[in-house]
Amino acid sequence: MDKHDKKVLGPILIIVAAVFWGTMGIFVRKLGEYGFGSIQIVSIRLTLAAIFFSLVLLIKDRSGFKIRLKDIPLFLGLGFGSILFFTICYFSAIKMMSLSTAAILLYTSPIWIMLMSVMFFHEKLNAKKLTALVLAFGGCVLVSGLSGNGLTVTGLLIGLGSGLGYGLYSILGTIALRKYSPFTVTTYTFIFAAIGSWFISRPSDMLMKFTAAQDKGFLIVFCILTALITAVIPFLTYTLGLKSVEASKAGILATIEPLVATLVGIFVFSERLTFMSGCGIILILTAVIILNLKDKKKKD
Image (cartoon, rainbow, N blue to C red; front, side, top):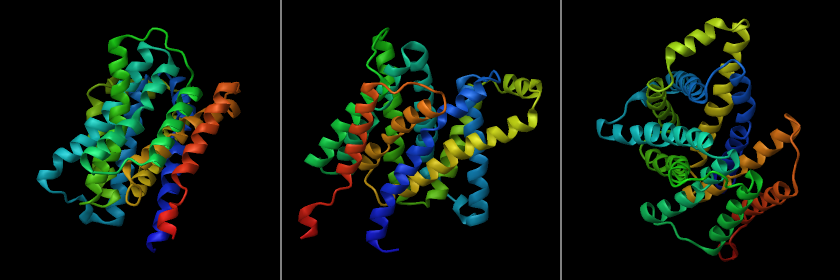
């Protein structure tokens, strides 16, 4: 595959990941019907995803399990500092404030990614990126809603923490990809995140809920689908996309997720599309189009 093909494929992979993430509401709501709490759903998702990634790496390249001792903090950062941290912050924010406000704070992630990319990777802030960033964030605000009721300083900090943790995956993932394959990066990220989740998800209570379920076969299959569709496929495609897409650009492209989540709400849960949400969708799509416009100077 030549450089041009990689440049075209990279953004597509990021967008595919965002589309899969956008369907998460379907799985969370269904598992919630079985009595699982938000953190327990996260733990199920992370644990099964870690198993899937490990099996893929085992089949594809066993040598991929070898990592340097000095790089363990990097994978701890990806697992604990990014995946697990942003999930805890996000679900805590949902309990402390309106869902729309929590979602807005989560999607400050492109701003964090852009700032960290400038600091660590010396990426340039051009007019195209800044315009796309403003449009994408504005779109997320409109799609998620404008309610700010019940927002406290603590809630604000936790909400911003979810965006920081979410954005940290792009930064640490980019660093890890310089040394390891996408399969190694995702496998160890989820292994560490899954282990961390066991300490906060009350595993014994989860086991009781599995035992109490009347349709255990369906529940097990549904849990596997949850891991595949909301974790394995999107994180693998996103990590593969990071190999050819700048972290800041990837963060903005991923804002398609709330757009997809809105469409899922309309078509699956019969939620209404408001005028504001419609405008937000248009802004997010415009941001994605702007990011993928070719630079005239490079073309000449």
